[in-house]
Each structure stands twice: as structure tokens, then as C-alpha cells.
Length: 343
Image 1 (spheres, helix red, strand yellow):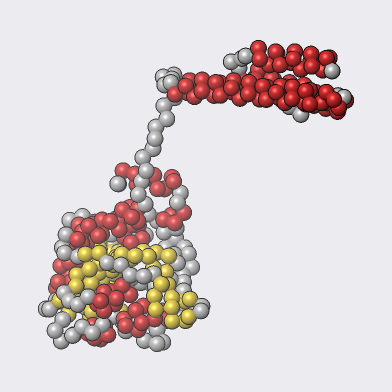
Image 2 (cartoon, rainbow, N blue to C red):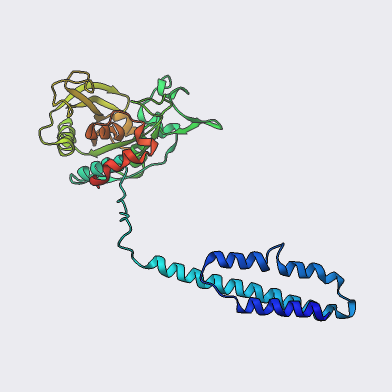
């Protein structure tokens, strides 16, 4: 009994006297006294040999010893941690400088915001619509016939549980909702994400972004449409940009046209981007078909209007001379960092 107590007392004094300012010494202290093969664990193992009448006193001494060792370890550990934190907080002028790199907006966001800003100058406001649409707003109200290929599964992502519900294929559906909910005059643009069942390649993707515009009022003409789009093209691509309109067909506009601009890469001389024509198509447009107005309970005898739509990816590729649409979706920092200065 006396031998065991003397041993405990001696170890207690060793622990109480221990001090260090090094992590290695503290770790050695832990291994010696607190580890599974340490001194205190050995004493607890020998505790079984202590006579029953002495177990209470010895057990109390052992518990006090273990508590003292743990407290000493924690106290010194906290002191070393505080000293380490204080050292790290001091500026060391010899260390290399770590610059915090500025962030950047996505190129699609840059062009989207620029398009919105340009049209806002001539009175257009921004409105939105849902990405999951019904057949009426996405097709029927826009004069798409039943046999139109856009209604096929190979072109549109339909929701299986309800064949009348699909991911919208264009933001034209937002135009229908606007005409149903708000009466003329209307002068709005509709930016948003759209979906089409297309193979992903350098020139196409199954997800992309559009901005569509709508202007409905009394006595709106094709001349108003041309002037608005002339203004847009030259504000976005520069005053020297040439613009031309070509006849086209869309179910929801009549007459319809596609708008080209002079290739900003070759300056109209001809290159592989413009297929050596000197022109690049950037959007479709036309006068809103009277049937579409009537579908939305707007008097086509009193009101006329124009609509247009463009792909933001296509505009961005032209603006920044990007060759592969897939770059917009890969989140490669080497690509995105190039647009830091464009914020």
C-alpha cells in the first residue's frame, strides 16, 4: 500500500513540475503518462492487486493523478496554440504576397445584362415566365399546327406523366402569358433559359438562353421593328455594323424576317464563321400574327405589334469570338477569368 502511494505521489510531483514550450515535448508527455501504454494506465492495471480495504484510497489517488495529468496537458496545449496563433497574425514581410484574385461574371450574364440595358433605353421593361410550360402557351397559342415537328419527342423535352407539359422550347411562351395578363400597350423583353432535345456539339446545346421582345400598341409597323433592331445591333456591336433583313417564316409572326449583321470577325470580307458570306444571322423577328393576338383576347383590328427573339449564346460567341458553345457550361476557370475585366 505504502509503495503504491509513494509511486503515485512521485508521479504526481513529476507532472506538476512539467513545463515546455515545444509541441514535441508535450506529445512525449502525453505518450508517457496518458497513452494506453503509459505510466498511469499501468498503475490502473496494477490496481487489481491492491487489497480490498485499501482500494478506495488508492483508487481516489489514481483518479486525482489522471485528472492532474490531463489538466496539465490541456493547459500547456492551449498556451502553445495561443502563441502559435499570435505568431501567425504578425505580418512577415519576407513571405511571398498572396493576391486575392477578383471574381468575374459569366460571359452569358454579361451579354444578357447588356442586351437588357440597351432595350431599356428605348422603353422596354423586363418580364419572365415559367420554364415548365403547357401546350397552349408553348405551342397552340403561337399558331404551331398539330403536325409541327417541334411537337415531336425528338425536339422537345416532354414531362412523361403529362404529355401536355414540357420544358419550354422558347421564351415566346412568356409573351403569350404577358398578353393574357396585361392589355396593350406592351413593350417588354423576356430573358430566360430554354430547352431543346438536341445533340450537344460545338455549335448546339440542349440548354441555352434567349431574349425575346414584344411591342404591341396601336399603329405599330414593321418600320418600328426595324428601327428598334437597328439601334440594338449598333449599340451592341458598334456603329459601323451593317444590318440586313431577309424574309423568313415563323408560325407566330407575319410577315417574318431574319436579321443579319456584318461579320465582326472578318469585317464583312468573308471567313469560316460567316461561311465566307460576310454576314451572320443573329435573330428572328416579325409582326405578331393577328391570330396570336386574338388567341390572347387582344383586338387585332385595333392593335398591331412586333416580336423578336435571339439566342444569348450566339450573340456572346460573336461578341467575344468564341468558337465552342460548350465552354459556357464547363465552368473552366481558365476560360471564365478572361472576362474579369469585362465586369
